[in-house]
Length: 82
Image 1 (spheres, rainbow, N blue to C red):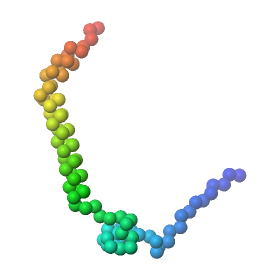
Image 2 (cartoon, rainbow, N blue to C red; image 1 turned 135 degrees about the vertical axis):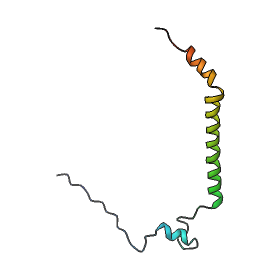
Image 3 (cartoon, one colour; image 1 turned 135 degrees about the horizontal axis):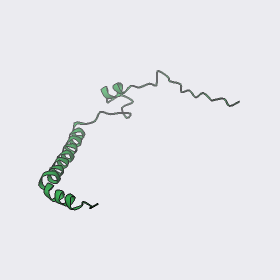
Image 4 (cartoon, rainbow, N blue to C red; image 1 turned 90 degrees about the horizontal axis):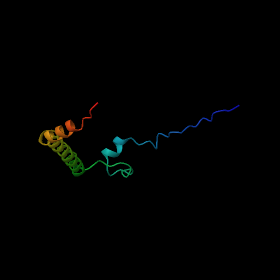
């Protein structure tokens, strides 16, 4: 009664472009599809990731070690009596 429609995408070999083809030859006719990432973009990304990691380590150290006694006292005073 209810038939499922079969959808099919035809793949033509002449139109198929693999990523390796576009990365190797940046002057090809399909170079706008995918270009290699420049070295400066990678350096900026790693620098930002390293900065975020250092900030995370710094704030973790500050909260856990430097202000640990203050947070311990706050936690101990927060007990309820039963």
